[in-house]
Image (tube, rainbow, N blue to C red):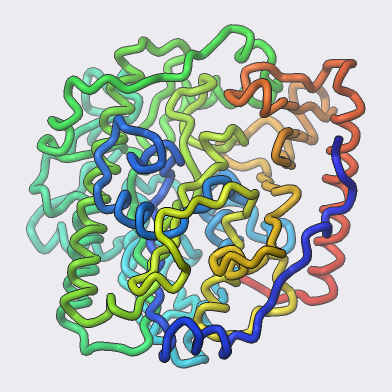
Amino acid sequence: MIKRGIEATPTYRYNLSCHIRTMDQSRPNLIFIITDQQRFDTINALGFPHVDTPNLDRLVNEGVTFTNCHVTAPSCAPSRASLFTGQYPHTNGILKNADRWTKSWISDLADSGYHCVNAGKMHTFPFTTPCGFHERYVVENKDRYLEGRYFFDEWDKALAARGLSKQQRVTYRERDDYSDRLGAFTWDLPEETQSDNFVGDLTKWWLKEHPKEDPLFLQIGFPGPHPPYDPTPAALAEYADREIPLQPVTEEDLANQPAAYQAMRKHNNEVDHDSVVLPLNPSEEQRLDQRRHYLANVTMIDTKIGEIIESLDEQGYLENSVIVFTSDHGDCLTDHGHSQKWTFYEQVTRMPTIVWSSNRRFGKGGRKIDELTSLFDLGPTLLELAGCDIPENFTAQSLVPALLEDENWKGREFVFAEGCRDGNFISADYQTMIRSENWKLVHIAGSDELNGASEGQLFDLVNDPDEQTNLWNSPDHLETKNALLIELFEWRVETGYRSATHYADAR
């Protein structure tokens, strides 16, 4: 039975300075690590033994993990803009990549006394807007082709200084096997020039060379494991013969997907977004090869995270730090027959989300919190840990009560996500997801294939956790479908009203 009311879970706010003093005598350094396109099932300590992630395992085993945290958008810039503004895409106006995004709550941290530094990807637009940071060392997508194709970031400049040009789509296309690779290639230039190695080393360089800042907010944006899936040959060798479980792609699943999703499959077969050509019926070996490249890239990032933690310790930051690790969205990796993101399957929406503290300020390590949370809830969480006020226009809710084991904290009853027509989701105007503990509904508006009519998906997550059976047209589930659609309507109205009342322009 679905309970009514999207505001059933209250927003908790604490006496911030009181809790800061309780947890530590000074404001903590905040280290915010965000990878790009990393699925939940990519960390050994979270139940996926097929990947090597000793440093992330340490954060899990000594910290707090939110195991049911979901994005508010299934693509890079909208997800990140939502995370850094505390608002949903439809209320901050940033609905797709290259929508203008220049403002964030990082300005609140800077105004309160934090020295704010970005090393790596943020995906603001324009790419180099300050967005509240004192210093930015921008590294963007590995393979930019539409917006920013000729924008040269710190990585491009470093390669150029060595007389090199990065591997990217125009060079991969010269390969005879390009259409069969599913975006999986090795990085064949010097190892230190691979983008994730570069961002990790850039971060270590800043920590070593820059005078110590107190307190520090450091955002580290790894470009991987977003495609091209490009581990170094040495990293890939560790996965050469590794068996990795693959979710079967069934005819029932493909046949019952919305027309807009079927059209997107066809589009991704014809257009090589991010150097990925999607075969409509890839072999198991193709799928395994792609997965091995992807996981090897994850391990490379994990190695750099370990080195960054060592650098934080060496430079005197770690003893009073909170490290937050997450990603901006996941990747189907051919599960459900899809390439990359742009859908609302669990592989795309569910994020690895870990909070770690050097002095166990959040109690016993290894704790896992299974209640529903939204990725953008990390924004007010970091502000609260810093002792800053949470802006009134935020729809995001602080997770500090959960970290402090407040018995009144219940998590969210529903999480929501949305996406609009863009260069990838090309055959409908808008899609919206509502997910409860037991159900997920996806509403797709303005389907071209259905002459503008709506369509969707409905999944019973208890009996069908792999989302194989679409119940959208099932008469036996009409009551559940309608109840979720009403909740979706109420959410849209309430958040729209809140935005109109307390609007903060993110552009």
